[in-house]
Image 1 (cartoon, rainbow, N blue to C red):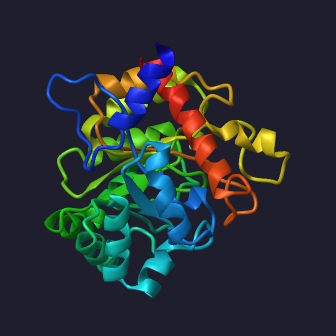
Image 2: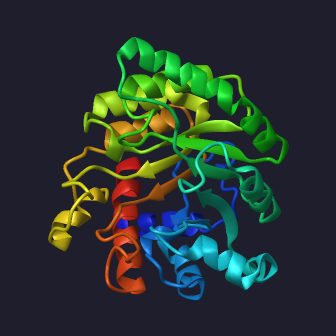
Length: 300
């Protein structure tokens, strides 16, 4: 019965995006695939893997983590749209740390054109300050983001600010202040990465509930043994759900409590960046499926 239930869950995840739970249907995660999980493999090799992972859409990453965002421009947007259609997939959005949060005008147009809904970027501002000054800096950042968020909202796109080490939005308090500051601002949200937070399930679950409807994207990604240096692959893979020490059940319960229906990406960073998390596309897909099965088993 367990295998049958997991099989049915994986089939339900293949529905066309945007994948919102039908009224009265059990809550579940809506998986999206980050192209960087496959390093710099070409789109022709990655796209056939997307549905196998339980996702129905893909997010594209640029160098140094991947090359798929650049490849989309190289092959042409119309050709890329045909490639998606051939696989029965939709386009989710892009990660553009390289552009930063204030230079996304052209990217917003591209994401809209391709039918995407979000762009992930980092915060901007000094974080090596006192708590009082940090709060003021987060407030100033929100003010600077307002015209960019307005443009994104006009185009049906949300800029998801990721919490990231050595970044304005790094500490739990800065995440709370950001969530409060953008509560009533369309076009901007938070891409929450548990990896970059203390591995305290109560803390992370509380942050999920605090962010609530401003959650743009959720990374199923834990710290494990970090991604900052080369290490044996079995240690590196502890960033993946079900391999590290993080108890995902409280986090999933918090996501269910706020009825999070946005994209969830099973995620990690390999060392060096730009390589698949495992040597082949098939092995990479199998590891994502293993992590998905772990998360789905906790939900069921």
